Length: 121
Image (cartoon, rainbow, N blue to C red; front, side):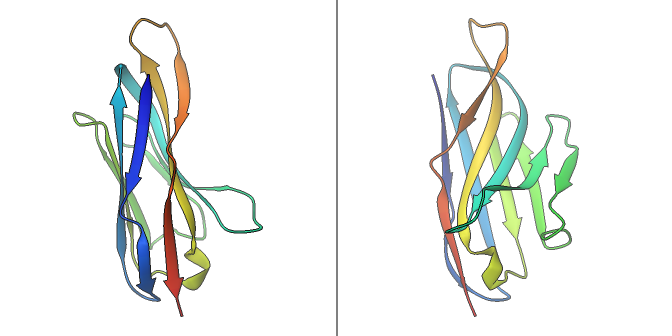
């Protein structure tokens, strides 16, 4: 019913920047919170940044001041601008959205497949 597709990952040198995008499609009535998560090999998945439909944001301490999250509610788009990247930012980045699907009366969570970010030293 709902698909989330990320793009924008790749290989970048330390200190560089990348911009991730996530587009949600399907039978969407409304999207509540949208998040970026990441998971590095051998580590637990962690919440990187979160943004509500009203634009309130939260960031993990490890990325504050370096990453920015934004969204385009009209186009169901989510972005993550990553600056001053470090090797420890290397991970698979996934987007998550709480979506109110047409024909239902509740929000459900959906995940994208992820996009790989690799930061070389």
